[in-house]
Image (cartoon, rainbow, N blue to C red):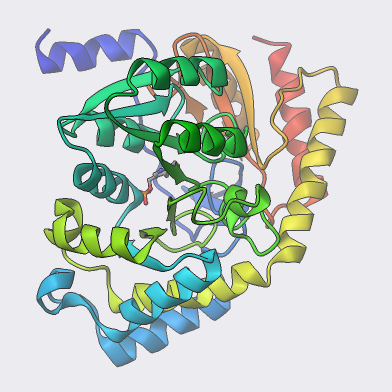
Length: 384
Ligand SMILES: *Cc1c(COP(=O)(O)O)cnc(C)c1O
């Protein structure tokens, strides 16, 4: 099918995407066309995207280091804020070393491109984030997937391909379902099969773990068990960018070889400085993590009281699965009329027949706002 016909078909299938234009900073309340909306679609889980301390840190850093980094990291783009951030990350994550990228999408491509050769089989959970999937697809290796969190299926694939170099890549907290990968069990399988484990915990970082170091911290996985940990700064950290952390040998290899690291301009030094400060806020953010837990409980309790179906997720990501695309968009539109932003998530982001509202409950929300959300869903569900 011709590209433009294909796009036309998407309109008919309820798969056409329209961007909303926000007039305000991110937060639980945002402005669109002079109207205030209650926002349940943001990944700004700790409410740091409009934080005053971080904004001042960024302004100060801009005054000191200017705007652009000037070049890629290996030419002259690596400045003191970048260097400090790498060290801070390594100690925060209890890893030997860390490397900073402009985006999580790039971090995944970089890591896979450096590690995977023709003799490698990349094994992934079927519900992994698109950036992990693309990283495997664009690599030189073979790409196989196991059913979501199905350890038996994973082991079968490892057994089948055990003559090859094996790499397992998984989300930590799954981005669209909010459930957790069984990291300890996967790490054990990696040991048995001599496979390298890569976990991208973009959604768990900041929210899970005693110091906010994500699902790997909550699962107690050290660098030996989990050699490569990837995360992003555009979600809980409220800024942008990403990292990979692990052994000094791995990190040095990426600096030398990962094309998605080498051939891109370094992130702004001011962004590196701001992330550095954001890590402090994350580490000190236990009250924020506790507040999220309380709100998630309230969300579930209220949903239960109103007879809405409850999903399995215990996390800040709460999928409200409808099924069909058009029905999901219709519900999202009704909520929009109630001044609630709950974007419809449709294929290919999620499997066919599982279109949903993907609700994120953040530290910046309050009880009353969560109640308003649940009541509005209840009210409109009856009408669909
Ligand atoms: C959001 C996300 C990414 C992409 O990170 P960006 O910095 O936005 O490019 C990568 N991995 C996972 C699991 C994500 O959820």
